[in-house]
Length: 270
Length: 270
Image 1 (tube, rainbow over the protein chains, first blue to last red):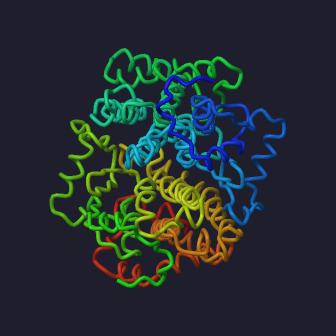
Image 2: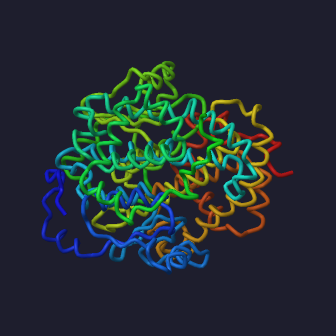
Image 3: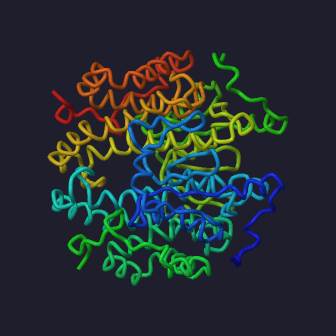
């Protein structure tokens, strides 16, 4: 695949080139984009091959074997609490922002330490903030009282939570990223950091995309009001990256389902 | 200060030794341990000096200036969404696990890449998981419906959430860390990873400590049941580290207040 941003990729040392042959395995629940999507987008943007358990008929068993109470990890790797999981050679890690931290330099999706000593930490903080406010909190909207109960058992509280989320929390976080894009460290306001695409941009894309799915009316109103135009422009800019565009049109991109970003019309604005 | 674990500190290069003179500044809300406590414990354990805005009479103004909608960061640093914030030379970063990621190698609280290539990622994933399940979720218990409303306005839902948390979520996460401590990668079950104290242990200590404060009855029952004895032993082991012991007895350790870990007797077990 061709990359429209070759400068983002650093030169590989011979040791790293060797390592590049080690397959990347994403292990995540089947049937919905979920938190695994952030990992998929990183591979897809950079054109690096990976396997995705979502398309393996034995996926459920594979995920469950990792998070089973009987699984204590191995001599190198602690056990896993929850997917997404990345397996790369003998390394097994989880936690979305942690997997992206690991993949960032390998996929050319963060500045190298030589280019910018603080780059890794800035990209990580932007990623963590997007996941906090635009992913985890969105999940909590439809499960405010108990993640173990059905939505139907906490529908009234979910409506109150959705109202507060759309009125206060969503604008707070969109406003934060608009502020980031308006800041000097963004180097021009097209990308969150350093004038080039990083994995934080892919994460923000996926969060905004998911919220559009969950709350189409509210997001239309917010987009039309024009207060966060740089954030919406970034979403569009990522969507139109050649590799991302191909991916979104492929059957590797799964439909939103009963995951983080659920469309319950009664939780959206009218 | 003396460290009882000198092998945890790697040799500093001359460049790094120079950098060591740059002061570390923690910027966090005054009056409660909060998320800033994870950063304080890292400095205190390693005996590295730091300044703490909590004891500066202008603390509120300082924090608010960083998170103000008018603050767009500078040419090197994106603006900040929320504290804790670390300032180190020209670098300004936020997000608790991100600050710990940055400090880990500098304070000797993670294995170096030479010792263990996966160490940084494993310690980061353990940290992220503790913060997810034993800190962020605990905050949500007393604010299930709207973080912008008072506890009193969501007391009934908080009681339902607390019941589910104590019954399902808390044992799930304590069980996960018990599983980690029982795994081979812990190298003996005293510390979470690699047979030595890392900042993930300090984070787990603070989480368990806070939950003991918030839910003393439930935690007493759980501790007595003995199912998570390795986790409780780790809490005690950290508490008795010489530097940590001194810190906990000092006036630098602030009392729990209206932060993450609040003791509402009506939310605890009887």
